[in-house]
Amino acid sequence: MRICLLITAAVAFCGGLLAQTSGEDAADKRALDAVCGACHSVSLVAGLRSEPEWMETVEQMVGLGARGSDEQFDRLVRFLLRNLTKVNVNTAAASQIAPVLDISGAVAAAVVKRRTEIGKFQSLDELKKIPGVNGDKLEARKDRIVF
Ligand code: HEC
Image 1: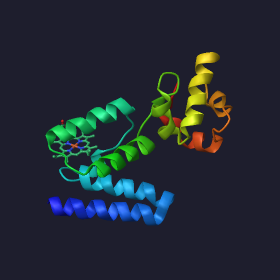
Image 2: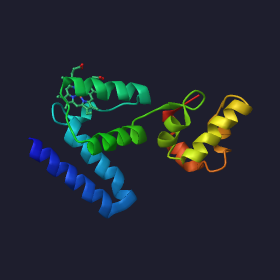
Image 3: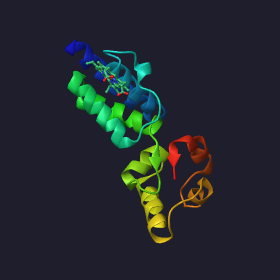
Image 4: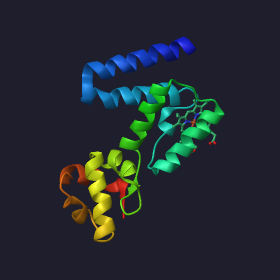
């Protein structure tokens, strides 16, 4: 069992190196499949949750016996943040906003600065005006953005 996990981690790691960014998400998904698919179908890992809610779920699963390498946990958490996490752009920290919106830490900091200086965001259009925010990317994630 432990050997299997090690091999899976190595494959996920090499896969990530070879395919670079486009393969990163696939490697992250493989880590999720390996760790979170061990007891129940990984299809149970669905729906949108906030970052603290996912962290709580992952901790709960570790309590139930979920095991994996640090790298696998880093990868599966990143997968959850990028794909299954919703964020309130008016209350979340920059570090929580960045992975969900797929923007850099600097752009996420600009989002926080804008809401502190000018006031809360009311719409996607207001968010799109922040330099560095890609409108198409935002549209694709609109279900995951809470105001
Ligand atoms: C050691 C076995 C085991 C592993 C590994 C495991 N789970 Fe679970 N999981 C369970 C059990 C048992 C339940 C049902 C108990 C419950 O609902 O509280 C469950 C239920 C769930 C649920 C539905 C309940 C809820 O909280 O909404 C989700 C979502 C979930 N797991 C996510 C994960 C994720 C994410 C991972 C990987 C980090 C994972 N599980 C790995 C045992 C496991």
